[in-house]
Image: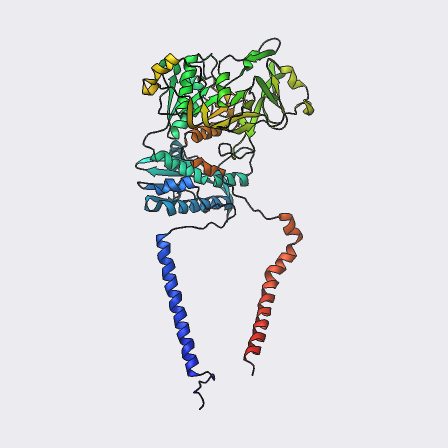
Length: 582
């Protein structure tokens, strides 16, 4: 008996079986998709397939966003219709905002607005002034349009709002000596830290308290006015503290700044600083180990001798793990100039700028630490070198160094103007990358351990606030071998120049950025500054290779796809013919 067949010569039972298999497969696929979607709602994750993990937030940022207890609102002032660079920055900001939204959920909102759109020129000027007061700095760009090139003003910034308080965020870096492409890339790298840091400061119930010590001939308040104002604008509480006015340093001080002390510290004041550190306090030291001053050159001989200072701090630094050497650095590759009178014309003295090797421009160390990553050189004035002391409980990280064409002269040093009239011998500047700023992290030993009398220790231990500590908790300090790095210039009128601005050359260096990064790192207990270590590589096309191999790549992109389609068609037809041929 012959089995009943269909038109395609397949048994009805076989056809029915195939239909059931297809339905079973379809139903199984549908169930699996439902199951995947259900699991995805319970277990959230994101995948970043880029090599440098450019779309991944660091762990402290994720923790910060997940713990938001109220709505954070971000307004971004970037117009996409400007040029390719601004569009790339805008897209990167949007990517970061979407990542923040993914972890912040309903407690994070953002929007892009153009505050200059639809306004007349006079109205735009008023808007620009208003934003400048808020801390958002604008820039003028040359934009190509149908009518040719025209100037367009943009406000590359953002305002972060939380519970009625606001912090401005400038998005575009403008670093000296960097190409526009590098500046744009550095701007994109810093986006996560800028936004997360702003959110963290707004969340804090109390502003971090930064205290500048007084009482030992430190820099005058007007000489530190710019950094104090910058810290206030960044949501820090800034104040002064006279060590002799209290029996201890306030424990709520987030950071103690000791800027260029020139008077001797007695043991009582050293003890207060030591116990503040042992209690977990952070200190930014800016100390001179050799006294040198340009005013001393205004004599007939145009020279002076630089001698070691006597501030009585060497033993403390040695105990903590660093030693500021009694020397002065010279650098012939990177240094600030000074003016010298070279002649007289019509009764008027003629001046010319000459490189002054005692004013080296310090560069970031090669360890890529977040404090110094992607910053410009830092101006220094008569700086010294730093050695680190071996200690298993303290980690040392060099932050700033000289260039490879430098050397250190041991004190006493004869400083004279005659040296700039001679061409330097590069073979004598053979001490490369001399360290001038170092970060110390870990558990420090008290400088007064085994030095305190038993009777005093027993008396102090009876008061909780005065209990002697011979070892610190995990804490950190930064040692800089030049006090003038934090000093802003003061004009004759009494006004101040911005920190880092060198009035003789008209150039602005990265002193303010460096000091701000130091203080933010010292006071950042959550580790948000870790995001400044991210690196985004710009994978540019090889123009030379494109020009030499342009015809090959054109053929590959136009002819090869057609050839592949024809080849696939022929192979598919051949296989089908063999399969179904009788």
